[in-house]
Image (tube, rainbow, N blue to C red):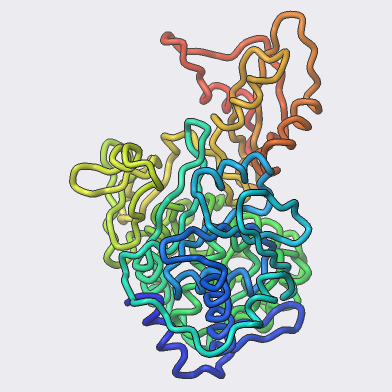
Length: 482
C-alpha cells in the first residue's frame, strides 16, 4: 500500500474531520487533500519538476503537513528543516541538497540564488497566494512505492550532516504497520503537540492517523495546561519523554483525568524507568515505548495488548527484522531508507552484505524477547528527542581562540533525557568564560545543539592509545536524574 492508495481510502468519506486546530480551524480529509493539491499545483507552476527538492523551514501548521503530501502527489522531494537552524546550517543544507524552491517563514531573511516562497503558521504567505490562483483538480503523479518522498538530514559524526533518502513506500509501510499494531481506528483522537520538521511529529503521528481515518487534535506546541484542557476530547497522545515528565508535575494528571484515554506513546529518546513507573501509578496507563530513527522510521514497539516493559523498546514491527550482532542493532525491512543523498560510500559503509542497516545503537534482547538499548556506538546525544552529534559541536569549540581541545557529552537530565555538556581545556594563559563559549556557539548552531553547561578542566582523560575517555567524563560529571 502506498500513501496515495491510503489517501484514496480516506477520500471515500471526504467530510470526515482530519484535523482540529487549537485556533479553531477544522480540516476535513477532503479539504486537506484539496489544499495539498493546490500546493502541488502551485509548486509545479513555479517550475518544480519530479525529483526536485523542496526545502521547508516554517513554523508548525496544517499547511506545513499539507506541503509534504503535496510533494508526494507531484513527485517532488520534501526536505524539512528544524526552525532553530542558523543561517550557516541552512547554507550547508541548501548547498548539499540543491532544492529548486525554499519555503520559509515570512519573517526569516531570504537567501539569494534560489526561488523563495513564504508560509506562516496561520495560513498566509506567498505560497498561499500562489495556491489560491490554481484551478481545477490536481492530477497525481503515477504511484510508485520506490520513489523518493523526502530527504531528512541527520547530524554526522564527522561534523557534516547527511541526508537520509526516504521513499513513498517507507512511509506507507510504517503508517500501515503502526495503525494496525496500535489499533488506531476512525474513532481515535490523537493529541498532536510534536514539531513537524522531525520524523516523530511529521510522519509517525500524522501518517498513522491518516492511515486509520482518525483525527488529529493539533496543537502548535506542547504546553501542559493546554494538554490537560484538551485531554478529555482525546483517546491517544504521542510524545517524547519530556512530555511525560512535565505532565507528571501537574496535580490534575490522575486516573480520572485519563480514564477515557487508551494509549500513551513515547519515543525519540529513552523514557526513564522511574517515569514509566510513576506515570502508571498516577494514571493506570503504561506508556508504550517504541524505537525508531531518521533512517528507518519505526523499528520496534512494545505491545499494545500485553506487557509494556519499562526500559525496553519492545519487539520488531511486522515485516521488519531486527537483530543484534556483536552488540550492534541492525534493521532490515520496508521501513528502512534507501541510502544517503549523494553519498554512496557512506551508504555502502552503513549496510551489511546481506542488506541490514547498522543503526549504530548497542543493545540486546532480554529473556522475553524485548529489545533493550544499552548505548550508542556513534556517541550520539539525544536531548528532548533531537539528535546531537558531539563532533559538530566540538569542531566549533576547538576553533575558538584560547581553546586547546574539547569533549562534548550527554549527561542525564530528568526533563530532556540528556543535556549537552562541553568539557573544555584552555590553552596555557588563555582566559575564556563559559558564557562566551555558549554565546559564540549560538551564532552557528541550533539552540538544542548548544551546551547547557561548560566545564573547564586542565586536561581530558585518555586511554593508553590516547583516545579521550568520554565514559570517564560521563561518570565524573553525571548526576542520576531525579
